[in-house]
Length: 451
Image 1 (cartoon, rainbow, N blue to C red):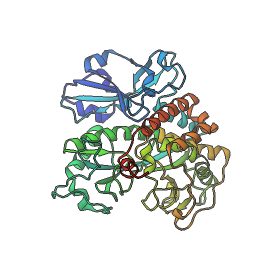
Image 2 (cartoon, helix red, strand yellow; image 1 turned 90 degrees about the vertical axis):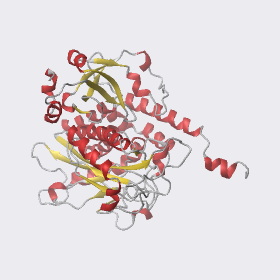
Image 3 (spheres, rainbow, N blue to C red; image 1 turned 30 degrees about the vertical axis):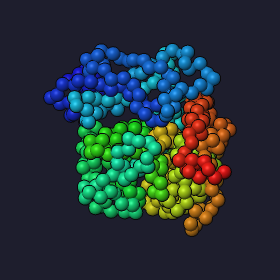
Image 4 (cartoon, rainbow, N blue to C red; image 1 turned 180 degrees about the vertical axis):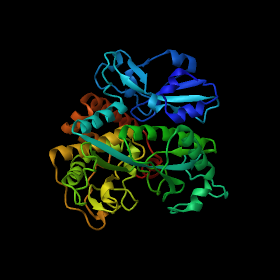
């Protein structure tokens, strides 16, 4: 067994026990959350303490184009990647014995690369730590299992279940619905166990073939790493059973969208108590300030929580998706929900983010809003009672507007890093522009001969 594996977690060592490691995948998450990097023979990885990648990978769009923010990224030296051995885990779907390791990214002077999404999240977490606070997050992942779709001009269809029928909609929490694609779920569990990833629960959501998977609560960077890994393993599990897994926000017309709900709490490092819980068990001022910060600043980061043109199709009233920034206790029509809990587990659930967001950037953006609420003691609007779909929209409804708000958000940009914000905006505006060049079937059907 290689010497470096001694620094890896127990599950990684167990996976290789008695086996010969063939290959190591050295990976990072780009702006879209796609795994990029290099694969190399295990022997070479053991000899190489670091390697290089061009920092321009963070300027690559989802279509494969390269955005230019007017800076000199294409001319700058490569960034230095060093393995974070705490992230080492199996790639159990491969034909040989392969490990994957997430890498830290720094420039050649040793400074963190500002445009790397994982570094953006670390930067936000460090702001909490400097105040004596430890942010805690618990994410929920929603996704669809769908039939293979090799023709992008054709609509996406639900998968064929073991009964020989396609998955049916409106079967939320149905155990038989989950059993329809049980072999995929079984592989998800098996792969997760081999990788040392813990699943808190899996359930059928409201859409045809839509699944929700809950993760435990913990460190934001660690949980973002896990979502990054989970997206990959879920896709691989689906492919083994002749279907796709998609994290697209709205893949099927007239079906609910897929969200990445985030539960937030903050621990006081000095006392170990939940900052949101007052000594007498009631809600603390910090709890309300965190909500106030989210209400004020979330509109400015929607471009991170809803990063594609398709993301905004999810924000439809009465489709279990928020269209507002109201807050309420145990109220799923509000964008900010306070779940029922014991006082020590008091938390805020941000229901705005789509599952298509980069997990590092989505969590960073949400935490940044709460942080500004805490430090600036922002009071929230009164709690909303009733159906919040009847309230005014509180979020931008298209990517261009969201990017305008993001560009104008001085405090948010300072927290996330101005250079990152500039590059991100450039990437997203280029993607939006590419979309606007595409003429849809709806336009051809209704406008070609009628206007």
